[in-house]
Each structure stands twice: as C-alpha cells, then as structure tokens.
Image 1 (cartoon, each protein chain N blue to C red):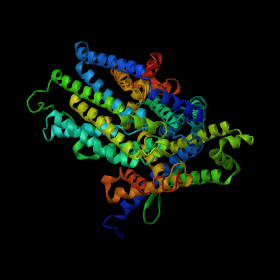
Image 2 (spheres, rainbow over the protein chains, first blue to last red):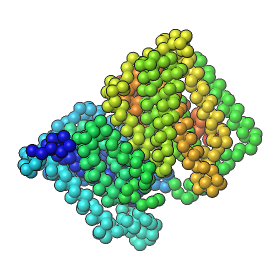
Image 3 (spheres, each protein chain N blue to C red):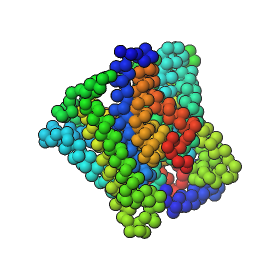
Image 4 (cartoon, chains in turn brown, yellow):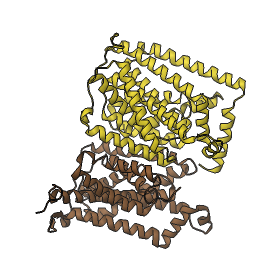
Length: 295
Length: 333
C-alpha cells in the first residue's frame, strides 16, 4: 500500500470518514439554526439540548415501546418538533418585540432545564443504542472498509440538507418564507399567516436537530450532555459559513468536519481548537462569514 | 427591539443620564448607604457565615460586576466570560504553585493574563454586534476550555489542585482562611470602587451613549470601537481579578471555571440582580451562590432550578431585583 506524508492511508481515510460524519452533524445542526435564524432572527441555544432529546426520544421509543430505528427517524423529529412549536408559542413569541438577546438567554435557560431533566432521570452515563440490523457490517471500498451505518449517516445528511435547501430556495412555501424574512408586514398583508409560518419554521428547525440526534444515537452514546459542547462548535461553523446562509451552513458544516478530521491526522493537538482558529481568521478578514452578505 | 420600545428606552435614558442636581445628590446618598451596608456585611459576615462561603460570594460578585460593565452599561452580551475568569484562575494557580509567587503577585499576574486575553478576543469580537457578538465570545471561550482540557499544565480533568497561598509580600502568613478573608475583602472593595468610578466617569457616560445609540455616538465623533475594546479589556481584567482570587480561595482551578456553564451563570447573576444597575450583580451573585450552596446535594435539580429561574427572569422579571427596588425608590442603584 502507498503512504501519504508518512501517514498510513488506513488512518488517513479513517479520519476523513470520521471528519465527514462529524461534518454531517455540523451541517444538519447548523442548517436548523440557519433556518430558524433566517425567519426569527434568533439563535436557538437550545439546539444542542434538543438534538440530545431527539436521540433520547429514539432510545425511549426502542427501550420502552420496542419501536425500531426506522420509525424513530420520523417519530422523534415530530415529537421534538412539536415541543419546539410549543416553546415558540408560549415563550419565544412574547419576547419577539424585545432585543433578540433575550431570546438567546431564554433558550439558554431552556438548555439548562432540558439537560437537567434528562440528567435527573438518566444520569450522565451514556445509554447504548444498537445499530439497526439492516445497516450493520462493513463495505469494502477497495482502499478502505466503510462501516455501512457511517456511510448511511453521510448519505442521510446530504439528502436532508439538499431537501431543505430545495424546499427553501425552490418551492412556493420557501418563497413565502424568504419573503417573510425580508418583510413580514408586507407578507401578512398578502394574507399569509406569518405567526403560523414562524411557529412552523421553528418547529422544522428543531425537528432537524432531533433528526441529527436520532442519527447520532447508534454512533455516539446517548447521554444528557451529548449536545452541549457540540452546539458551540456548530455556532463557530455558522459564524464561519455566514449567519443565516443555508448554503454556508451546509458547505461549512461538511468542510469544517473534514478539516477537523484531517487535523486529527496531521496535528492532533489542534483538532479540537482548529475550527475556532478558523473562525478567528474568518472574522479577521471577512467578518460576515464566507457565504454571508455584508450587513 | 421595536421602534416604540427603543424610543421610550432612549427617552428614559436621557432623563436618567441627566438627573437634576438634588436628585443626583439623593442618588449619591443612596449609593453611600448601600456601600455602608456592604461594608458592614463584609465586616460582620465571618461571625455568622463560613468565611470560604463569603469569599466565594465576593469573588462571584466581583465577576458579575465586571460582566455587567459590558452587558449592562455597554450593551455587549458576552457569552464567554468564563474564559477570563477560568483562564485567570489557572494563571494565578500556576504562578503560586509552580513559581511560588506570593498571592498579590499571583493575582496581579492573573489580571494581566485575563486583560491580554480580553484584548485579543475583544479585538476580533467587537467587529460584530448583538447575537453574533455573543456567539463569537462563546466560541473563543470554548477554545480556551478545550485548551485547558488538553494542555499539560492545567491538569486536564482533575484541574490544578492544592494551589498554595504563599505569604503576602513574602511576609504575612495567608494559609489560614482568617487572614486571607481580609485580603479578599480588600480586593473586593478595590474592585467595586474601581467599577463605580469607571461607570461614573466620562468614559462610562460615553459607554452608555454607545449602548443607547451607537450610530449617533459615531456621528458625534467618538471612536466607538476603541471604547468597546477598552470596555472589553477592563471587564476581562476584573473578571480575571475575581478568577485569580477564587483560585487562591479554593486552592483550585478547574474546568468548571472555564466551561460555558460558568459564562451562563454570570449572565444569570447579572440578570437576576438587575443588569445595568451598579449593585444588581452583587445581589444576583449572592442569590445564585447561596442557592447553589444550599441546593448542592440536590444534584441535577440545581441545573433545572437555575434554568427555570433563567426562563422566568427573561420572561417576566427583566429589570432584576435591584432594578425593581430602584424603581420603588425612584432612584438609580
């Protein structure tokens, strides 16, 4: 076998794969944040906690009700999305007229409550979630062995990202949404129920995070703090990609995951900080983010 | 913020920023009374409270005041103040433990480290506003957290333990909590008076102006970015003062000090006490530290309660305790 810069190709491809998997989660999570930010102008701090909840709901469905992964992939985002809509209606709406920092603080408080509740009932140790039977095993790609489930994560993330992009950029519903982002008063004058649109958008963004959580359950252990540190990396991804940019979130998510994976190969000490360093550089040269419009 | 709310805010701010002279004298009198009460408290507190608890309280009160300078007076929500607090705690710990420095130098070193970090992060963060600013400061703080987790000098998961309290100026023994208590009190008083001075200086007035209407301050010829950066550095340095002192109080600097939950805690303290008030952060810190102290054995329930308090404050109690009291007394505290 050949060697690249003294790194065995197995290790290199292994880390690239891990990077892409992390990147898949970054992309789906930052996409949800971008969708919410676009219409509501708030940053949903609770995104990480809701991602954790998505994983936990899927674990509960399997453990208590015997509902398998495939159904959880649909049910869990619906459950968490519905909770998101309740949160939007009862707590975020009253803050809509105030400084958006209050919404950030509110969702921060929600993060503490949600994390605390799950810690209270399930402790901090992880719960294992088995890989669905149809996706176990590995595939021989010639240059490396690919665990099928890991490939599945990447494929699902790409599909969801593309579908969301299509929904927002190419459909009629998406055009309402984009119009409401630009000028909510005008859009509601045209007879579109903007408050409903806002609620649904928040629910959808939250459902995306729960979807990522369900995908994550079999590869990471399901535990109450699984989303806590992840969400801050995702914030950095959003700042790099450009706030509120759908494409920025998707491309930024995947490529930063990849960069992180490669850093693990070539300079492991920096692998946890590399994204923040890139963020600092982006802020230095293009404060609005790579795909962001100047504000 | 809606147009209407903004206008009312601005008018109240104008009314508040230029109180007539008798109102001003009344306000100053109120402040003196509060200072006297604080002074009385720190003197008699060790008689009926555990000194380490009071020291913790003073450290966090100082931390929250430093944070409030940015949020309450500058309108800048930093979600990364744990970086300065925790970073300084490690710095003080390292100076005292490895270099054997006396406490006053160890804390001074901690302040310096925090100020330098504040200058670096602030330089990049002030390019953005509002939510962006919060996210960027949060991300930088997380970088510091990961560094602390991995770096060999910080002790990783265990933290930096058994940090010694060397002799003050190389002369006075500080190892007992009794003498060290008074040192913490002196640090706290210096910090509070400094903050009071900053808030009531021309610099502080300009800062409030930036909070209320940044474009106008720019058009008036103020170098807004410089003011913001200096505020950031002052706030970071004072957070460092609190963090460095805290490391010596507990003989410990750990990952808890640099984690984002700490950044969130200081936001909560400021919010519950009343942001933009002078004494609010002290009250808020007292409430939260006391709560943590008495609920410590409830485990994760503390997290839930803290989160619930956060939500309730944001939804219904945005003025905070001191804000409400000040309204009753028709003064500013």
